[in-house]
Image (tube, rainbow, N blue to C red; front, side, top):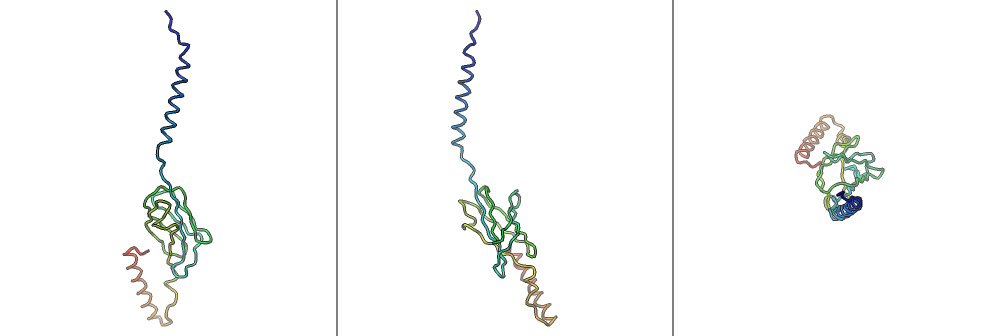
Length: 153
């Protein structure tokens, strides 16, 4: 006696339809990884002037951004977490800082502000007397070293 396989395509199609429906409902219930936006502004620490063209890197990731003419930078679609950022701008000392991104906030703020110290700021307003100028510069270097050791930058 010969087996009747005429219903086989129907069963295969029915099975695929059920499997497809199950996988779609399963995927709909899987939590999506929450993504965050990093919003910041970079400015000169002495004058408060926005710094255009500063580059922000989120270390050990592929994410980075560049500030606009108002010193603003926005980086989208970041997973929640703690990141070390590096900010580079010509004429300024490199700036490192840890930021915590969660619930649409950066370190409990909607927009973080980062102030960079100008390299030239340490050479301004020196006394005319060369010996006093050297003393002032030495004190500024000591202050910078103390700040760096405390990670104030």
